[in-house]
Image 1 (cartoon, rainbow, N blue to C red):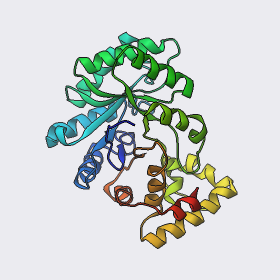
Image 2: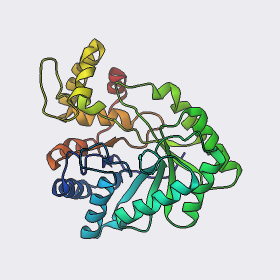
Image 3: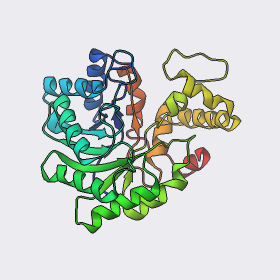
Length: 301
């Protein structure tokens, strides 16, 4: 099993430069570190989907925050390559160019964890492992991850690195939460066998697993459409009832219970969740010390 310690929760940086401006992002980052958080996740593509943005926006804000706070050695920064239209794919040339851009925007000379953001079937597993290992050897990256890979391709890359004696890939990042369970069949067994850990994204199902989306309610959020779609399945409504009961019994938020469940699943090291305000961060922090009982886990599962 990987020894890379992500902490109890990874702060997602996708909101920075999107739903959170620079000042709001700084406030969230300050509160996260003050609460004991250690790992911040971003990507070069964040947030190219926002009108007026071009990508690299989240990394730039995080870099400015790091420079202003002098906290580089207290936090771990994870970023990704391969999904941004301006620098797509995992060719050696693109990965090398992308890491230089990320380091410049982050105002640092290394990142703690570097992911291939999605597979590129035009590049062989050996070539992927070779260029990522080179970045470690050059001191630009400390640990390696794969995101959104099939089990077959993930295995091929991990085994290529192992066969060549290169830096191992230690973390996978994939879509997984209480209502999206496909990961358990498609990837979890492979990660367990190969010794990787999981850092799931969409941990709160676009906000549905915070409990604020209910039938007939309207929530002012850019994620409203994605979260509200879960209300169409009666099983998800039943799940909300169980979440609410367990949250009340623990005196904590539904958000904290959802994240604690995910953190306690096999192979999961820490869930990724984001906040656009310090107030939203409170519920994420509540999950840090919450350990659900076996009965509570069973009731949710």
